[in-house]
Length: 233
Image 1 (cartoon, rainbow, N blue to C red):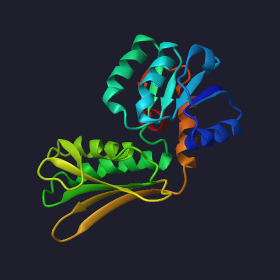
Image 2 (image 1 turned 90 degrees about the horizontal axis):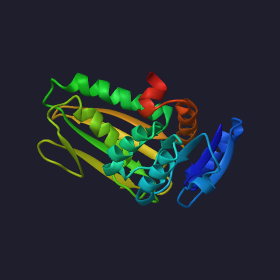
Image 3 (image 1 turned 180 degrees about the horizontal axis):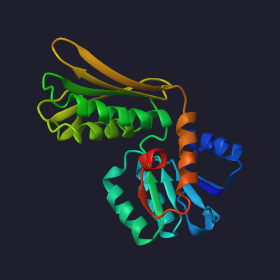
Image 4 (image 1 turned 45 degrees about the vertical axis):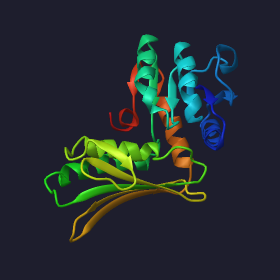
């Protein structure tokens, strides 16, 4: 494939290494806004930039009918708009809050546990995420995905909120520590005991590898997708 990397920070550089090692050609490495001129006619764009830049980056690429794989978090208020742009331009868009294989298995486990715990009101659920101090958004996109997975199967909760919550709000604790790639925990706690599931990333390489796999998968597709489609369809 010919891949354009939009956003060339730490993640972009790791994606570059992994994609190149698999024989793909990197035709653009952009820290600026993508255009028809600087993208250099790629087969797919992988977008890992900043929350404030993501929407216009994705929009520009989709309007050029280039499929986009996006891993930037913190901009999702405009995700529905992006999906409409993808459909209007008969191309493909894939958003992942986390591209790691292990995390996506963890998402599925989280939903399974939420279904099992649904009848047991004595257990209250909370989430915790720990990331490096350079991460700008809180909670993480993966923590939001976990919260949404729980809310889809547990009618007690209809919203998430940072820190301690009451009633129908699902609490997410966001912690920032030096050089932590990403840790996510889900707790079900009663007065008698606690059930915990967790995922800990050891490096960013798992995220980057999954993004390249998603880019390989999306070629020739039309519509809007997630990592569930890549891994489980």
